[in-house]
Length: 107
Image 1 (cartoon, helix red, strand yellow):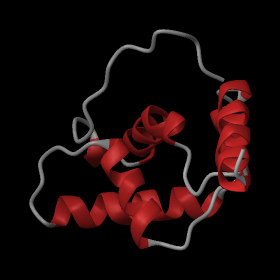
Image 2 (tube, one colour):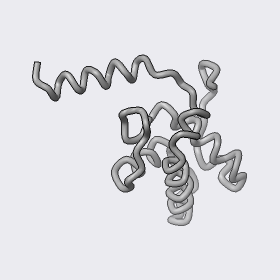
Image 3 (cartoon, helix red, strand yellow):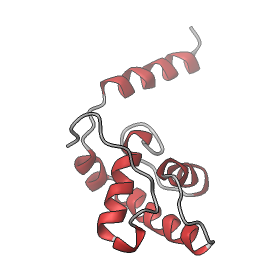
Image 4 (tube, helix red, strand yellow):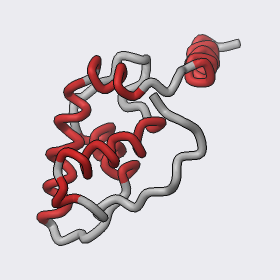
């Protein structure tokens, strides 16, 4: 197996084993939250009435230097958590992100 394939398989395994502990991830990766807030505000100023949290995370992934501490540049698993945090801390963003009911309890 090529080295790239081994690395990819290792990342997949880590991702499957990863726990959904958003508070810990958020605390350990403040640059991602900072970028999420800034890009959400910019997106809204451009006239968007709603937007996707995963879209914001993709902007962070491709257009900033923010890097998570879990082997991934940005962890998509926490998109719903970032959306909820944004709407909680910035009430003017209520309704900006469309939310689904959580299927399992998140920490």
